[in-house]
Amino acid sequence: MSDNADLVELFKALADANRLKIVGLLSHQPYSGEELAAMLGLKASTVSHHLSKLSKAGLVSAKAEGYYSVYHLNEQALQATTQRIFSTEQAAASIKDVDLDAYDRKVLADYSLPDGRLKTLPAQRKKLDAVLRYLVKSFSPGVRYSEKEVNEILARFHPDTASLRRELVGSKLMEREGGGGEYWRVE
Image (cartoon, rainbow, N blue to C red; front, top):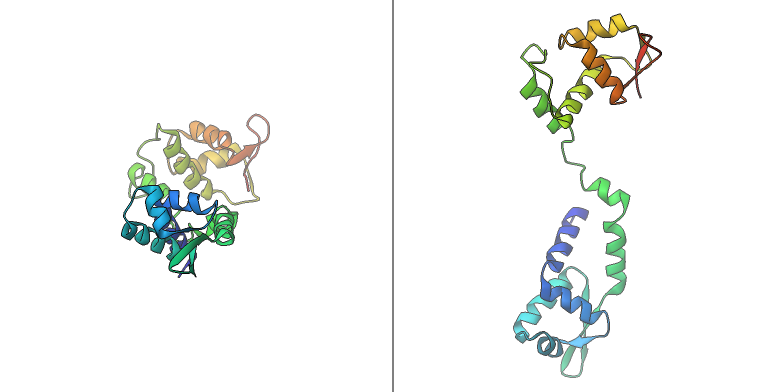
């Protein structure tokens, strides 16, 4: 099972108020299913169902004591899972199959003509940022461009090169030197 599937299983197990109460009770001391049922005002079969879900997620274990099964919270599993959920590595791994450029492509499809020129400049900041991320790819990293060269490149996309230049610099995608000096793509 993948890490994401494990996390989904864990969240499903905890996505119930009564199961959260059971975890809370077991965090103080072990209880039998009958005791939990009485404290929560639930049928024993319902508590058994909840304990099964929690056990499947690795949060609860049972130990036979006389005629009863006594349930314990697996605190180590809970702590390890909590650390895993909130780790930077886990957060990054959870999006490995997400298309991070889908929004930019959608905006570009909405605002550009078949030849790549822009119909108009988006008024919304997020959409304009998507267009700017696309435009800055027309400039090679490490190369310095004169204002005239920048205008020639940007004119391929839209006639308002001054606004595009200002927005590229303002969005920190490009930098410039002095008034009308050289421009370059920010790494």
